[in-house]
View 1 (cartoon, helix red, strand yellow):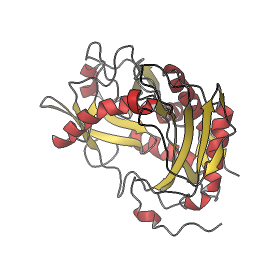
View 2: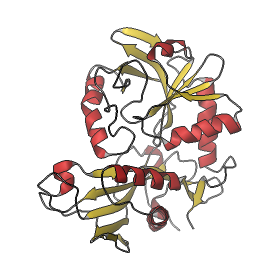
View 3: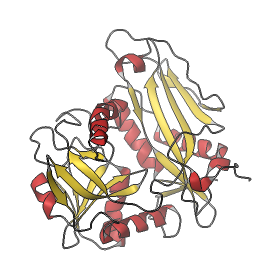
View 4: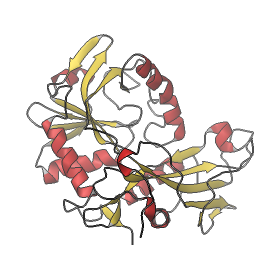
Length: 341
């Protein structure tokens, strides 16, 4: 199979239209058979539920070319599971897990020419999403939905190496104490946009959000979970009912325990503790781990011993091991790698 004529090494993290996408429609209480289509447009009423009441959820995962030339995806069953949890929370129909994985497979297979070659640093990013599409003017769930998956080739998140970033502690909340912070809903990301742009305007890369009830415990950023390393090499990650359950974070926790033999704690992390950690990273699909060099709390700087030049040693080992698993250089745990045949 010939690859598309794309400059893989200079791709950014942006949308490029590919050949096919998957669409399934939920109407009259059931999902249809679903299909691949070349049409990248969506036509809907001005009164569509998604436009009026933000009834939409989404996922993000990648397809990779492994060292031995296979095309694979990473733990798509967990994306299917999380999408189901998100949909149920917003009173949307659940798209069956087995059909989700089949749809991912179909989209990647149909766009195999867009999957970047091994060693390019690029990957094929997949965006499954679901939304209420029929007209709704009173506040209530939609009665018709679309589930779709599109994909786009994207470049490496870090070009020239992962340089540690600077965060600020936000005065605003990302989620309510018993709200929707633990699901991947579009509305959560909309809520984070103002604080993200304010952070950028002030010269910071991202925000650290504290717990909405007491503002004393670390939660997450607008789109990534935290991972800390203590000075004696223990991995610590915050636990909260209003944190999105990151698939990358869960995978890194397993890697830390089972591959690197590290002690791991998943617990409440008080902001007062942060100054005593040796390393800090943000976990997510796009970058795997983004190293954090500095956190600024209203003018007071917390500088991690790992510094502002490169990843700390433990975070580097975690990054290298997980990306090695994803790219086929390191043997994966059973069920983690889904091959596209």
